[in-house]
Length: 376
Image (cartoon, rainbow, N blue to C red; front, side):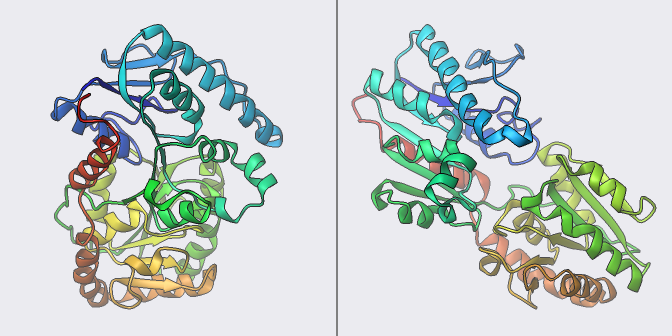
């Protein structure tokens, strides 16, 4: 079998020891290495400190300023794909499969597949609001996904974070036999729980509106008006960091930059409650990882929430986007240690029903290899 060609738009998420945020691609690359599978990983980057199988591409992209982002995003899609295509052609290697792991690299993947007459697989991290958009909105708001769905991949993989998963792809017209639903997995490592003298309420994720960070100041203010016997830890990174720092009391709330994936994973053992203010889905890694550590979760009732959070059993499900009720549920857990501990058991059971990372990745790779003819 020849090499698998992996196309990506990220240059910082393929090493397990250093990856921040979702370790999806790091686990994927680690699996390929451990199983002796040859691959070439191509992505845009200005860095040069990569192992031989990782090939950075110099891509001159336009700055994506907020007011003209829809247009610059479209131009950058073609610029990035052109740069990747030139680099792959210059390598003069033969591949058995091309796997585009982000929608921004779909066009290059399609062209390489056609040139080398090999299968092409496309992966989506999640579809969020895409199925609800009109045709014009799909083009302007998410051109990368719009293109990826029209390039006739041999297989479409989508991570099920609760926002739609494979069902959303099928509704969009992708044949069911081409769709592979990838479950969001449970953590491979679960750390022993710590006992806190004062309850610690956490929030973990990217600081953006999809994660609902704009709800945090009002929720936290309501909790602190009722009880001072509580600490808050907000962990992540993103464009709303300064907003949070300006709106939250520094003496009561710790706002921390997220570390590596495994450093952040250790934080769950130090929490008593997790808040999930996501506005699009809740079958997400922070929710799953908190429950795996026996931490009850308070979350808005958005897609995927009730698949993992059982209201009153391992957390609380709140009407979207009722910050008053949300704060009341947090206060209830802060004041009742016995309730928190009682919810911990069902939380672990719910998270353990999901596959751990190695099993999830093994499933993904096995589905990919079905596309490759045996003789290759």
